[in-house]
Length: 359
Image 1 (tube, rainbow, N blue to C red):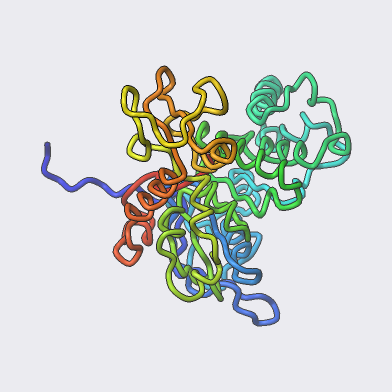
Image 2: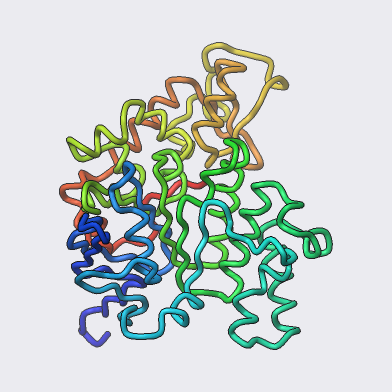
């Protein structure tokens, strides 16, 4: 070992005193300092008018900076051609923004074509991206946007945004216009895709549930784009900052922990070979769970029966009861750091992959 301190990696995106002012003089974002880690999915959440979307659009210069800097990969976004900047940053909006007169395949291949990729490379990348988002190119490639459902259009929008392999992806309430069932499916699929490709993402939403399902870290924004709390999902729900954040997250924080908390061995009773657990039942009946399943699935199973068998994938390792669910919730709350002491999360440095749900 050299004895030299480890180098701190450059943030994928960095806001340095960033300020945005609307033409009427309204200050939308005032002096924002924020680091976005490489490969993380950072969610901006907050009430309407807090500056979430404005912050996002400062990155690709759709909103000009009145002061300060935004850096992408260490480079000041104001220093180059804005068109070239936007071609290397993916962007997904609520209604997909597809070109109605172009096929799905042509929409996905838009940016690679503009970048001058050879035709065969564009065709291959288009097919790869459509497969990634669950739209087989043989079925969907020749269709037009009006022939797709809302959820399918959003998938095409994500495929198009990722087609040129951008290091950064900006998403402005991308699933807001989709029905609740489709929205949850899109959230799960996008979380899987982001993990697979490793793109750095800033994701804007007003929905706390969406934020905690998706975000590695969550920025709760207040008036003027001020980050009231920057932390992982579990810490946000377990220890919200008093005042605006607590009011915004609202009641039922424990219920929001259910879909982002896994069943662990310590939550179980009556391990294999142990005494029968209360509320005995026919071992061949009803649902079972696996270690690592989420507590929302566990709670659904416990509606059917009062004790649920849990396996490690091969053998039963114990049984889960309603008390076990409560133990699991207390466990994650006790493990969550007090955000006042969690300097790494607030500064966007230190731990990788903290929190995050998706899942």
